[in-house]
Image (tube, rainbow, N blue to C red; front, side, top):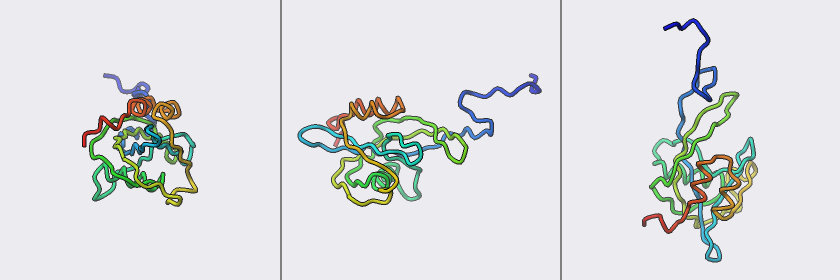
Length: 157
């Protein structure tokens, strides 16, 4: 095998070689208003695109607990998080010039409290909408499918 030629990389692998997939945990925050299910989206800090609250694993926290913490920090909501993942989506996180591939495990969080003040209030917007409308607002196709298919009646209690 001749290794002297140009290096061939899989798609989306940056030349700096940082191709390890990172894991994050996200919260699909939901509530019922006027007999209609609503889900919550927040804007990302840098690109301002609509996303679900999500973040890195946290020492001492289960994936669902980490998702609930992100929901509080990024969206100012608290509630009952289910420890069963309802879907996975992928996206590329741009950090300090590096494109990091991420996989996000999503956990449903039945919202009980919506706060007027929360840690990232000045950095994000939040929006309650129907699952169908939310699916049209996000850029990640897998997340769009999770949102569009979301039905809290399917969550086993």
